Image (cartoon, rainbow, N blue to C red; front, side, top):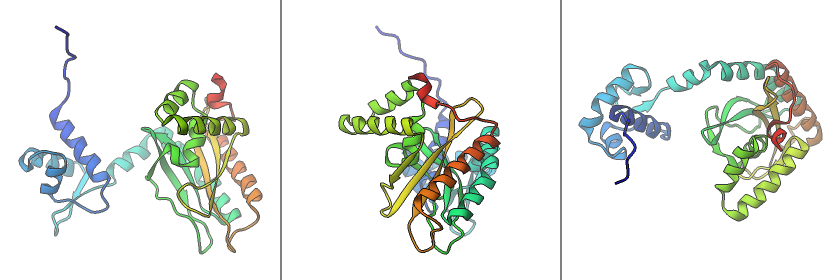
Length: 258
């Protein structure tokens, strides 16, 4: 008879996390009955969990509709994290200067739980620009930002992620990551938004590893200031400024393991 692993799960915590993850994916609120149905529990089973989450400020119940929504509590907690807070503070001025110089928006992303998380966004000063919501997440394999971040991971992390893709897609992505490692940055047509060219540069931390990626979703319009190549130079300079603000230095990232 084979031994089974002990179950250390906490049912109430499981319910709370299920509710938070559910509400995080909703653009509007949900009623208690809808929440119960979607997390596959009864309304009575989740009542006390909802009350606790509301009392602690993680969710909000609209006084008129009675619908529950996710609050900004978790986003606030994430920004209290010393590493994330320091990264955002170091990026604020260089990103603002970059947007002003190229008259394009820019954003800062990092890898989080197997996805690309947008930490900061600066709007274009022009009347027309590309917007990415702070806190939004995207699959790694569909974004130039994700490709650059993965290219600079250690080989074991990189290879494990590539192995999770379909064979043909994995081979194509491996070639792309090798090219990014060689050149040190990424310039690619956006896979989601036609007409946008993503310029992506690494931001290094004190350990000489890539902490984040600075991305300019470049749109060629009459509002653009200068050529695409000029925008590349300004983006590279801004990424270097953020790196310097973190006390970091450009390193090899994951390529060091090769």
